Amino acid sequence: MDDTVRKRSVTIAGHRTSFSLEEAFWQELLGLAERRAVTLAELVVEIDSTRDGNLSSALRLYILRDLQARLAEASDRGSDPALDGDGE
Image (cartoon, rainbow, N blue to C red):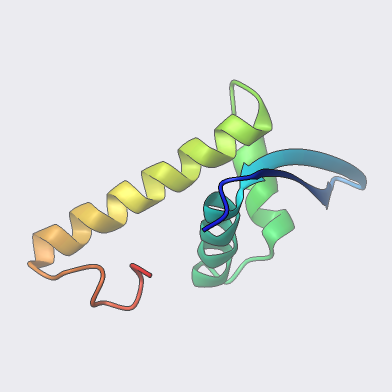
């Protein structure tokens, strides 16, 4: 997977904002929005509203915490997240 950081833009609260993410984080962010049945903009607004640092870092930390929670949940169930369809 490409490790290059790419600048992305999304419209929130009527204005364009940008953030920089590696492709792996971008794909996880898209998947997270899909799993939660929200738009990417809605998810970014949610993350943006609770952040302390810059938006790019807040997105990466949110994605990391989501992945950690999913791994812990899979571990508690005794299943392998790679086999559950969520651990691509």
